[in-house]
Image (tube, rainbow, N blue to C red; front, side, top):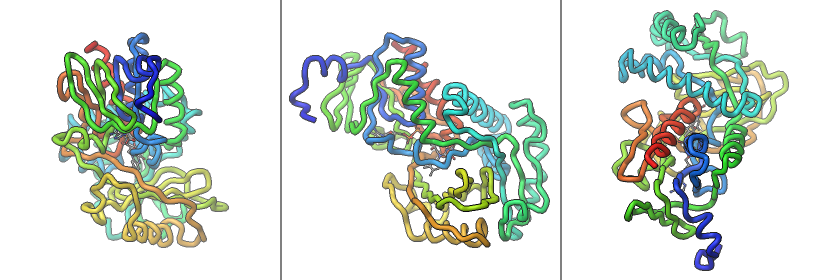
Length: 380
Ligand SMILES: Cc1cc2nc3c(=O)[nH]c(=O)nc-3n(C[C@H](O)[C@H](O)[C@H](O)COP(=O)(O)OP(=O)(O)OC[C@H]3O[C@@H](n4cnc5c(N)ncnc54)[C@H](O)[C@@H]3O)c2cc1C
């Protein structure tokens, strides 16, 4: 596009808004929906550097989850029991909010249950997790009203055809969805409320000037009263001091497998590996822990180490007696930090951010976007 040949109409209608949101992932879209719902007359524009949203929201595994027991044990050590209660509540409420906004059918939401898997070498971990089931079921009962959400399962390998899995804990409230459908629906909702989404437009820098934020992009200069940055893992490219680190997740999916036994969402090795059925395909991701240093990157891509390990896991454990072929591989970038809560704040006058979903954006993205949107709208 010729940015030096902009018409007056283009400049006034597209390049100037009340609120400029950077990033059209789950957080940015929910922020736009919240702002337009609260204040329909505000002009809201979302810029995304990707042709499609290009971070994590359309590249994830689609687990609608709030934590496996081994994850909760680790998180309780960091957040304390009260802090963990609040975290689980936020995730649960966030999932309900997403389902309310988008609708289960539009999300292809299915509640097939979640399962944490243990091998014989992980017996001590399994015993610790089983011993905590009562404690976490009590918390989940208070939050969701459902009793006995987590249960130990016997003879687990036979049910799904796994090899080497000696123990399992099920989670009756864990679901799965299609992240592509989720973002398509949120885009439709945001635009139906009047938000404008402009793609292939990278924000390169910004400055604040006389109550306005002036934003330099690959498509010219935009102006707004407020800017809200929802760029998650990429936030430190615009705010170098922000407390988060990127973490790449590599994912693969098989071609359809006739008679596939596996159904649901599965957590393996303390959640460092995750897999699920997508119809009669298997989607598998993870392995960041094999090389945290290399995977702490903003670059999309695959590495032989992670890919080889994912393939071995498929062959040896998940589909030991079923031939399969890989259909597609990809990666996405998450944001992690020392605290498990997202950063939702005014970073400097008129400039806000809502970032650091800690790999759980399906659960907390809607709530995070809404909180940030309300913060921005009420500042106008
Ligand atoms: C492989 C993988 C598996 C995952 N699995 C799950 C799961 O099963 N369940 C779950 O709850 N969560 C999962 N997550 C995490 C979840 O996807 C994220 O937490 C969530 O999508 C973050 O949403 P977001 O809107 O904050 O960021 P993103 O979706 O990353 O959106 C940020 C957007 O900002 C844009 N952007 C960045 N910089 C700029 C710039 N300078 N100018 C313009 N635009 C910019 C990007 O293009 C991007 O579209 C997974 C993530 C990955 C990578």
